[in-house]
Image (cartoon, rainbow, N blue to C red; front, side, top):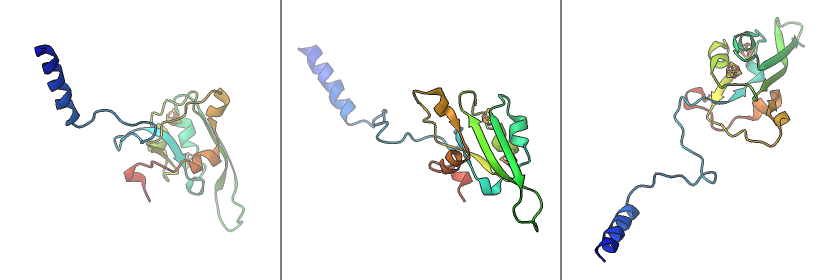
Length: 139
Ligand code: SF4
Ligand code: SF4
């Protein structure tokens, strides 16, 4: 009887304490601002300098550029930009080296899928990956 009362007291005490679990996936997990999640890409900011792809330790970035369609403007614009998330280690080096902040890390981390092919993300997908952007990178 004494043990039951002791157990009940403990349970009742826990009811008033702050929850340590989250209702995931219904509610997003609060993540630290420096969390390194799946990248967001801004095609209009990219100057096709290749620095991100050159520094990438796993060679998972492939990009191509083309001549600027406006003959009065110099340089290139981005044509295709792909990241293979099968091998990306989310190390942040590509975003650190980008001179125009065309690629930034977000707080998104959900990439689970049944097909490996789905882990190849192209320019359009990376451009639309614009939720959960780190506070410091918000325009
Ligand atoms: S986060 Fe690292 S591994 Fe992933 S694309 Fe950027 S440089 Fe490559
Ligand atoms: S480093 Fe930045 S500007 Fe250069 S190619 Fe990569 S994303 Fe584009």
